[in-house]
Length: 244
Image (cartoon, rainbow, N blue to C red; front, side):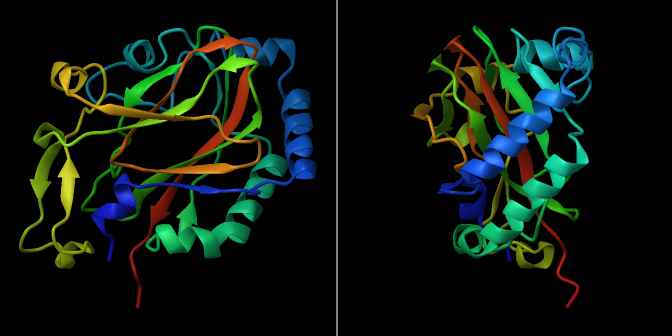
């Protein structure tokens, strides 16, 4: 059973990547991202992993990453295998805070330079909270720190406005623990109700190689980089239907 706490919690896995693994991933991505490719995945990119139903990729990018970023949604095979191995190795620690998670989706590489950031938003239990598999949390691991700025943040709120549906009587039939709440769709800065909702920000600059975990129903984002660049890998942790 998936508990609401898994979708609104935060956590960390120190040493998710050791220094040798971080160096190898940095080398793989530096070899992959030629000057032309860095432009193709940066200023010339016309698609995004972020989506807004009923809106174009261009509109979604304007809301989520108004100053742009480098985004590589399909990373080299060697990098993907290394990161999936790190996920498998971290499963015992991960299962203590998010026991329903059974798999990690393919990883994405992102970079932020000066002025670049991601606005606050919820990922949601995508793509459908009543279908399987279910996106329970995001995961992020930095391999290169900026000189200043670029902190990751989450935002908590007690506002009732965030929540859409309480699965009062049939939560367990859908694989959720009793008392499960589902957040409204469109919880991002394209929605006036979301932008106006009071929230409290918690910021962190983790050590390289540390994995940050953040529930899919928790606001998160990245603050603007002020000097240097930050490079990280991100993915989403999912719960699959129990076949037992």
